[in-house]
Amino acid sequence: MLLLDDWHLIDTYNYMKYCKNCLTTDLRPNSSFVDGVCIACRYSNSIEPDEEKYRLKLNQLKQSITQSRRKQSKNTKKAQYDCIVGVSGGKDSTRQAHWVRDRLGLRPLLVCCAYTPKQMSQVGADNLSNLIEMGFDLMTATPAPKTAAKLALDSFIQFGNVCKSTEMALFSTVPRLAIELGVSTIFWGENPALQVGDSAVEGLDEFDGSNLRKLNTLTDGGNEWLSNAVKAPYKAHHYFYPDEYEFNKKKIKIFYLGPAWDDWSNENNATYAALNGLSLRPFDEHETGDISNASMLDEEFTNINMMLKYFKFGFGRTTDLLCEKIRDGEMTRTQAIPIAQEFDGVCADTIIKRFADYVGITVEEFWDITNRWVNPKIFKIRGQARPVPKFTVGVDYAG
Image 1 (cartoon, rainbow, N blue to C red):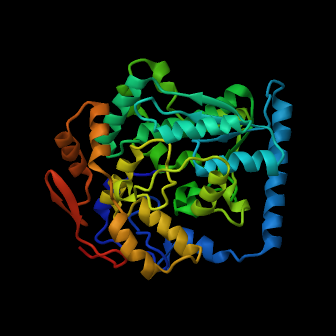
Image 2: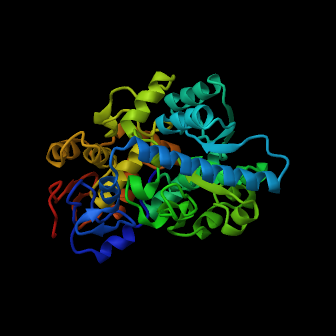
């Protein structure tokens, strides 16, 4: 998921501070530090392994789901499904689909905003097929390929985010189809506020996803840039998140499932999904920076976004994965630092070349655009060469 569009806010910072517990920095959009500790660590520290507490959490979630479904039955007769689960075909959504069907006993419709053929990876396509083979109903929506490529370039130029339009379509497709089909209950996996520290999306409780619309990637820059870029209005509709009036009219309710699981983690989800047919990425962390080889499997351009995230905020996907391991007690902060130094911001030249070809620019133009978004306070910009960090991972940087 990721959120790269608050680069303009960095100008207000004189330094970069790290969370005392993990390796998150205060340059993360919508970060919230209290006494030097990020919101994700504060939440993690508040949780004690307790089967009874998780049983109570699960009951709380089930009660909320029941209330949501009652509203659905009162408001429509045409819904054939109990709920919608947003999926990409990756580890998290594979496990979510199974959990909703097999643990909650619901009949889910899986909804996916599928990538265009030049963008989707073969692993991603295989994993969507795997969900169908496991007995799920799957509905996909694919943006017009030429429109998708144009918006990818526009969002790269305007926001330093090659996946902004893709992310907008991904998050918007699910509630739009829920409204269209009369299904009032939507499930997502992780709570961004608690998992990575995006305080803007905090809801009434840990399951409440009503503020998902406040995700940085959905709000920063507004929608005018997209409307201007797409001449035919019907082609832009796919990317716009429904407003609160539409949600309230159809009684749409979003729930995060992750907080109800005592073993929710990237690693555990990958293990479960792999045992149920998920194909993982080949061991190529030196090309992607993905030390799990199980993150964002559906397409490869997200690897570029993780590199851009690193150049903007001083951390990327590797740090996010390591922070989870630190919070879960699988490694210490000290042990995580050299791994972050080696893999954060890694993205192979071959992936960059494929993206440049996809959007119709040269590799030289790619780096010219990228350098406009590199944070010069924490990186040394070197023209066509990759930026070099001025900071040391884990150490507060004063510039």
